[in-house]
Length: 117
Image (cartoon, rainbow, N blue to C red; front, side, top):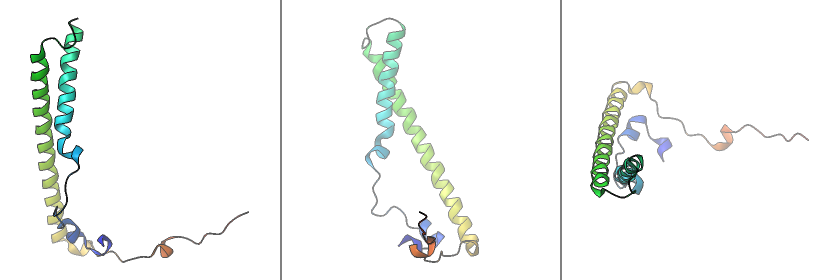
């Protein structure tokens, strides 16, 4: 199906009916919790305290990491959306540089196989 579409049609497909995978949706929170707890444990280990003492450090570090990684994800999404918009605009202006690819069969792509014994 997608081999018959032009470049601009491929860019205009959109996200209708598609859902992000679980890890793509929640990676910033999962990594934030892991890094936050790890930061608290590392700070306690460095000061020779019990690993889970001072639970407020763990909570603050977790909230901080989650906030930072969520900001990074939003910045990345905005950057990629702008990049796609630039590509789409360029293809609309120069559509003659992006012809619809011709459909090929696998038999036309592969070279004939000759066994050597």
